[in-house]
Image: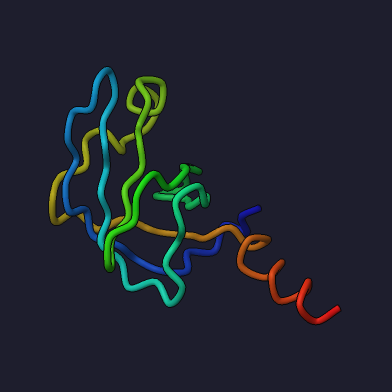
Length: 98
């Protein structure tokens, strides 16, 4: 679940062809980096993290996403808005508190 509030800015590291789609890699200073399988909104588009390495993560852009958003046009060095899934962020705290 997203609130629409940008929580961080990231920088595109690469945007490479990957099969019929693209692989977008974003550098970030997120306090809690995402894990593979987590959802992250990049410029308002909800995407699933496919890989994490140090302070960067990668997502797959399927052809539909490339066609309907501007993410396929992003280049290395471009800034992007990031938002993490609110439920994923706070649910573990609620579980351990109960």
